[in-house]
Each structure stands twice: as structure tokens, then as C-alpha cells.
Length: 311
Image (cartoon, rainbow, N blue to C red; front, side):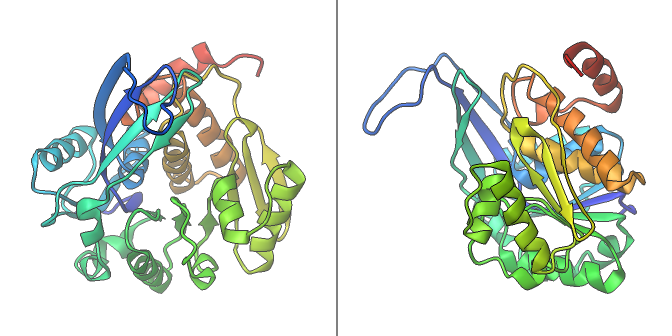
């Protein structure tokens, strides 16, 4: 077990991606032009993004003992992620059927499988890894109680936490949101948490400010092509996204979260980390697939010079 720059505690999935000419309506069967399969899941995606950029990454997750689990374990080894904290559960591996239309919009269904076996008790085995991390990254495709225990342990050892509250969960305890350093929803998740409208930037800022007023330290709200809103008690700023021609937005939010964690662990300021993560996410949406769209640090430097326009 190594000392991680970035410790991701969270989910894994096998992505089953179907590219469609249009989304089917209820009861309809349509033919699709192409299909791809790859490793995904919010936790895994974020871990891979940070690892590809050069962070020393550990990943606490639970895989199935099936072929999908074996495929994922080998993938993490190939990327350079520390796999000593990965367990094998009794259930099948999680899967995520994904449908992507020509405008690059997507629809996703997740079947959690072995991810539900990532319980608070599992974390106790890896307490040494938790206390040595530079930053811990969490999402909500695992039991909330596991996130809560991770936050408690991180607070105990003074380790900063980034919580990406995705998918949205109405049962999230705001007391735990107050205990993380970076709270990073998208606008839909922000609306679900606050019960406030987010159809304009002013309304998004008001909803984010409500969370800050409730005690959240840093709101980092991802807004897709509009960029990222960063709000805390002293600061409110929209940091623009990069102008690119999107091909596939699947996993774009995860690429932002993983790269943001990488840059924070490397010592960047929050605004610089957001700007760099915006660039990284901008590159990934110009490439098909989820993890396979996440470039290495060297490839990222080359691609962003070729891709970005009107910057």
C-alpha cells in the first residue's frame, strides 16, 4: 500500500455504450449504428483521470468476481492505480448501460452490484491509506454511510475531502456536506439538494450561496459548456469552460473531478485547479468513450494546443 496523492473511495462500473441516431420512445425498438464497452463508474473514472495526469492514486472499491471484475482490475493496474485496496465482493460487478445521441447528450442507467458491498467496515481496513492521502475523493454510487465514515476518518486525520454528490441523493445529510472541503455538484444535483430553480446563472448562484450559508466551505458547481461556478464566503466566480466541438460528453464530469483533485494535490490554488480541470474536461469531450477519452499528461499538452479555439 502506497501513500496516495489522491485517494478515491467509490464506485466502479462496466460501461455498455450504445450510440444511437435518436433516443427511442416508450415501447419502441430501434437499430443503433455502434456499440462500445469499457471500464467506467464515477469513482473509477475519477481515479483514472487523476492517475493519467500523473498522480499517485489509490482506489478503495469493490469488484465482482466475474469477468467484468477481472477486466476492470487489469485496467486499473495498466493505468498505474494502486490496487491493494480493491476488494472482491459476492455480487456481480456494477454495469452502466449508456445511450449517446448525435448531439452527444446521453442517458445512463446504473446497476450497482458489488458497489453496494463497499460498506463503512471496509474502510477500517485501509485507515493507514486514508490518513496518508493528500486529498480524498467521494461520490454517491456507494452507500451514503460509507461516504460519511470516510469523511469522519478524513476529518480525524486532517485530510481534505472532495465530495461529488452524484448521482443526487435526497437523503444526503447536510452536516456531512459541511465537513468536506470541496462540494462539487452539477446544476441538476444542486437543484435537487436545495429545492431551488437553476434555469439562470443568477438562480444557480443563489442556490450555491444557500449551501455556503448552510456551512459548506467551497461550492464547485459544474455547468457543462458554461463552465464552473466557485462560491465560498469570500468569493463567487464563474470560470468559463473551454470552447470545443463535443463528440461524447459521457464521463466529462468525472474527468473534471479527477483532474481537479490531481491539481489540488499537486498544490494548485482552487481557481487554477478549476481552470486546468476545465481544460482537461474540454479535451475529453472531443473523444469517444469514457476512460479511454482521458489523455495522459503528455498527450493532454499536445491535444489542448490542437483542439481549443477562440481562447
